[in-house]
Length: 441
Image (cartoon, rainbow, N blue to C red; front, side, top):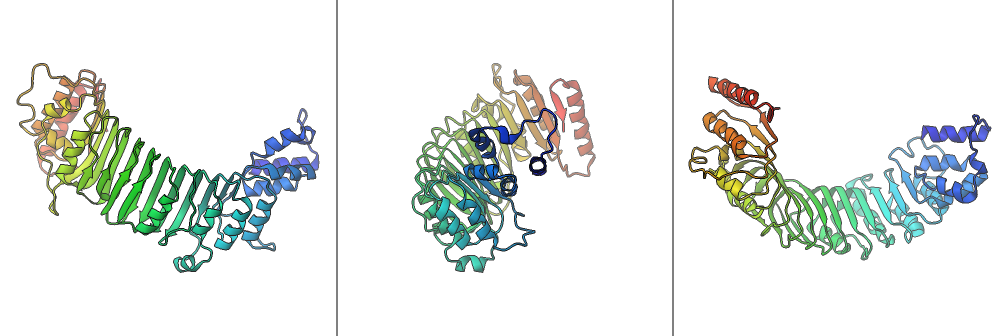
């Protein structure tokens, strides 16, 4: 912004360095093309003051951006809503509008009545009014958006969606992003119904929802983050889904997964009771995280994700009820036989401990190998069963014929007994003997 203001000042004072090409010597079409790439509202105002020719070119800009502090030092006449309206009224065909500065519902309504038909991308920071004011505002900011009927991308920050927005169907909208929202189930459902052709959906930091039903036939990427007790339920029907990330749900059903390649499920506040995906034949990356998962949910995910290439597991406990339970024993040989394409494996705490049970390596077939494994990241939090843990680490090196990196992370080892020191010494010795592959972090 500073360089642009400096350039405008030089132009007005006719102080040009040697070899400098004057902008006013350029043909109109080239000047308009250059200036059309300016989008910051302050820069647009500065350009208008340079010359009549520059001012005549500014109506051809395609994008306009109002930062949060656009009107912090405003002392002139006219409120910010009117100033924005005047700027928009001078633009021939605006395609993108981004407003982070405060505005009213009436202001937004007047803007979109001008530029709605041409607008393709709209981003609004809507958290400027108190909740009571927002509820009583007429027209509501959400309902005003329906005037931009040709939107392709809509991004909203700080949304109060306790009532269904009065939207017509956005036939061209492929991207919807809502960050920081308080909403009701019915309002969210109505909003999604108005966007039937979405390919990308992002809901981050949303609270108040209990049951989420998504039925979008073209959806390919979906990221959901529900804030609260972690007890939401999700039902997703999107046959083209490729990327899915879910945080804060206890019950998850995804009905069609033929194209799902990247899946991440986390619940930092509650318990994951049920997951229902079916065979995940296209899945390449799976991440499951949380404090407590029911064991059926964990074991089903591992069974369905047999073709996965990168597996990240950070579930601390299992158990169907309140008491936290450790993972049951997992046979290491059977685990890797069931995941033959696994290339990278991140095992944290409970998962690694489950693979280190005494019976895991009792009956190893002479032909057993881990064919594709290239990188393993192990997180150790306890010196218990130290001998079995060391044996498991050695087995990963022995049978992982293509293993290139084994990373060992030791976190918060809670023991005042000398066994913790002995275990740490064993790991250090193991790292030294295999230093071309093993490292500690």
